[in-house]
Image: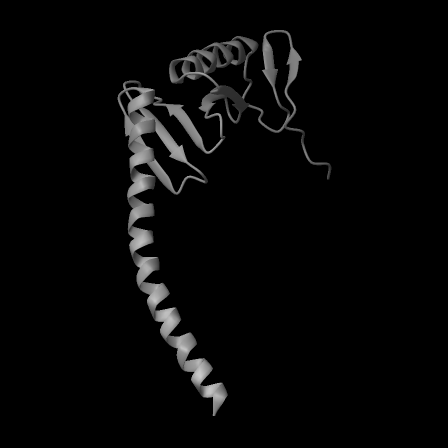
Length: 137
């Protein structure tokens, strides 16, 4: 059986991938492009809109480093920012408040990990010294 394509096909008002089958429209696609562009511009220089199809057309804004993704809330009134692979996700009433919140979460985690790693470094050094003493005997 041949796999269905995820490449959208335009047929009149429809613009949908055979693998999707929802019946997505070209109007929905253009709307996602426009709204994605607006979202990216709200976030500033270097942010890019990303539009994709999966049972409808969706959009998000990608940071210049591509490590932060911002999605609009489907019910309105909030945005969600994801850091890196989605390990961190935070909400905000504006795109920028969501981005600031997810960066704060990432930095707080980094601070905790730095403290943990410094404790582990001392333990590692102790075990390394013991191993060196054992080899001298």
